[in-house]
Length: 525
Image (tube, rainbow, N blue to C red; front, side, top):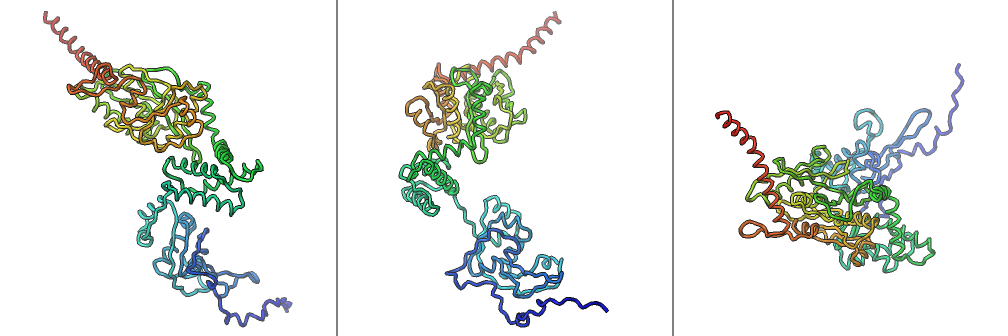
């Protein structure tokens, strides 16, 4: 006979016979005031729908109805559930389960295995009617993708609310910002800000959106600035955070991220990257570009050169030929060609070939903010008018010759200023920007002081003619009633050179025919 098996006393659980009389309260809202508002930061299938828990005993699992647990959907029943769309999409089965609940207005707690037929048997709780509002947060990218490719999305999520990342600057908003700073300091037991420190923080918020009349609503970055300012004030054993501490926090934040900028500035200073800040050169101009590293952006001057000669090739974009230019940049070059034809080819064909190049650029060139610099270099090369190298230029143009606004204007100005400062400020250096970008100027303190002292200049331009006058020092000149430009103006010299090019090309094309005719006449003799 086999020995008797040891019997656990757990098998004779005294409460077990009465388990079936228990009540499993899966959701208890007796202490909730108003409709429940639940935020699910980890919307897995089980966290959303609920789960049936199990216990292990003697090598097997068992369960009963007391182990049925509610998910965030049931917890928010009669109220609101807040989820992040990306989090839902990242978790398998969650998105389909969420849509199914919204469409049927009921939630059924079941295992994923039972849902897809992998496991059979076990508890099968009845569906529970739900009335819940789902608030799905996410970027416009996910909204557009789901709206386009998920047929159910547009039927289920019918109300869309866009939240801006900036707000117009008003006295009320300024007071709200001050209150926000004070509230965070109170909540996290930080040193409070004095008036000047609050003003510096608000100015930083305006710089984040590159606009004098708007403030950023990216409060996570503002909070980081407040905490870091508190740190520097604490280091000095101060009782209040002052403006100097806020500026120190901003400076240190930039220092942690500007290694690449420093490397590039060093290469420019030692002459490895060639940028001229003095003198005059024909067909050469300082353009400005922006490098975006994600958490940090900075500007860098780039030398743009142009060579022109009689021909019919038009504008040759060297970066495009080398497959180093983007579509927007290529479009800008074509617009430049349209401007030249419309401006100077009224009474003659545009018999011009010109090569344009971003010198020492070995990555992709993209954007149209250099088109104003390129057209200036082209016109300078045509008329052989030297361009002042002490002035950089940024801005895009249209076919009418109007200067259009660009992005990153502050970074571009600061990038050229740093180069000029390192090589020595002469009092003649400056930057030309589109007139529409004046409202976007939120420059650093040292640049503002240099401009006030007239050691550095910022010019705003409306048309290409404005740019040429500043860059060359020569009046642009308007077209007169007879179709010509006023003598000794920039446009007069450009138009004159283009006529000469057209004549040279015409003679060059006729030369073979003349020689052929002369040869035929000699043969007849």
